[in-house]
Image (cartoon, rainbow, N blue to C red):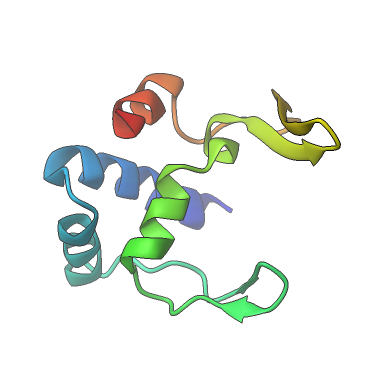
Length: 97
């Protein structure tokens, strides 16, 4: 979904510029960037606008760099995903720092 991918990329860029979750949310909302209102985590709804918790989940989600994280009996594991990342590794690591 290219429209959603564009919003995710913009969220990463905006965070690097603003360096704050709350300021980034405010900027994204003021500039009419929306996130899908789809069901998440088995039943909760997203608000459609950016909130700090939602933005944090987006910015720390390794799926956006093409990494699948999954749970095993031994703990969390990671593997290269079957899909391509929509954020480059350098940008992702800068946001994590």
